[in-house]
Image (cartoon, rainbow, N blue to C red; front, top):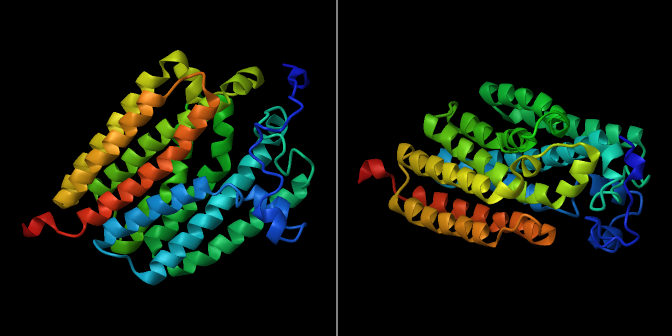
Length: 315
């Protein structure tokens, strides 16, 4: 396929890079491309990872988690999310230049060289490795198992229509580590919570994939959006149902109180509202639906906080 045949629009309205943002105002000019590579200017994904990790810490502790453990996990989440974005752009640099949304990213626009991006990725990973000294053995092994997933997940779209599953597994790995480091085991209920989040991630990231489906088709890249096609609402509905069922059963197995189940109903209605608004051929609307799931993430955190207030085993 001749990728150069894919033409760009002259305007930059669809780019995910804002040219005049807080990075350009407050950071040294030479730092800005690295900050953009780490997505510091687009922190939605970081917030997703931080909230899901924190809610696992709360659920595992049965109360507010230990301050030291919380700091370690929050730092690790930010570092690994940033490293994941860097390796994603490294692998996708030859594709991103042909997609209107991504063509102004640091690597594709020439603000950073490939060598600089790789060094930045390695530095982030080395800093993250220092946090291993604060984890137990089980969690260290889980952290090491995450590294190959981080490196290969951007390649998934080249080989499978289900790269969102790989991303969901990788992106939410911190939930498993939160349990392993807190109680040195991962109960089945905790694993169900994780599976529910992976299913939910697959669904909301499909909204995001629908924004790029035209470019992905031209470039020969795969995604759940391409696979689902016009049946996207049915597929996403199914994964949302799987998520809610996993969270429901997990709540029972983990002895969440009634507040958790009441608020889980609110979460379910929020997801239903998204499905009512979803349209396959509405990139702007689908990007907004993707971002709306950050609110769902907060609702789920509130549900868990309510759930740990009272232990059902004492009722």
